[in-house]
Image 1 (tube, rainbow, N blue to C red):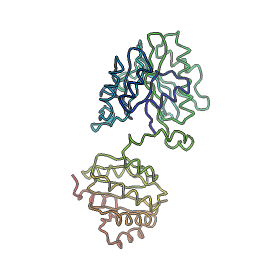
Image 2 (cartoon, rainbow, N blue to C red):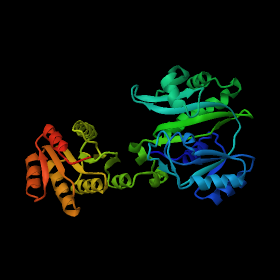
Image 3 (tube, one colour):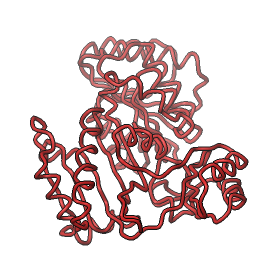
Image 4 (spheres, rainbow, N blue to C red):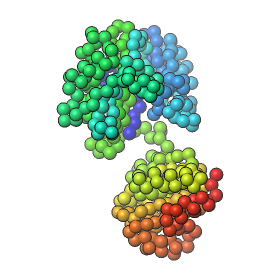
Length: 387
């Protein structure tokens, strides 16, 4: 689960990681008032969306007066911000963060992530923070310092010092730097995060370390231990169908194709998406109903697929292990009776109670194309009238 920059900075403050003074607002007049309260001679207005590269898209701007802050906020709020990470469709801005301006002397990158290859957390640092960190990782990996963490020990002081030395921070800031790394890892570990990032961590003109940006992503599978963070989820920033699916314990991601899919299991979902591509079409979604899906969940999943107006055909591909084929078939039939189906539907079933499932589909009186195998499903998808 992703949260916004302003929310991440509030958590940073709880862990004594220094951040600029600021506040999030939803209208231009609020923005002007916040600038007045902060004081100073310069302010930064930052669009709050779940995507990086905001500065390149015009989502981070500097103002010299409170009136300019209000004007920038008015322009940003309601705009569709397109960045390298949003795709061409962009994301709508519904709130902005107004912060004090900071005179920057040096920028760094600091982060904590899960290294899946080594099956442990890794702390990452670089002397070249800012918007180009992704390109730097690809072109000059030698400029990035890494320390792999033993979860039983946490982050020892010597590893924190290695990171600070590797970044090239002034020795006078060694204690402050190691403190930030130590607290960053504490946050990462305490809240079951998959990513915690400061980009950039800056040295100011008065020789202080400050987290100018903040990013936190929580492991969805661990949120039952951190229910206080559920209220931080911004459903306005999510696709409405994805929000609806999550409320019914369905794993749904909308894509840009025109063939809807429903499967049980992430591996089967990936194979099914490949099958659709090989058939010359494009998947419209990723929908995994899971091994323990009920008839109601299957029904809801089918309804969600059909709400996507881009869907011109559906492939349901189920291997009956924990989820029996007859349960799936009942759910599909129930959903089909509730929703006016105007697109062709291919159903491929195999596994537990497969014959019962096929009988339910055959006796439903509905026009399903039942595939006998994956190869047969591919042929039937190839024959769908999709763009």
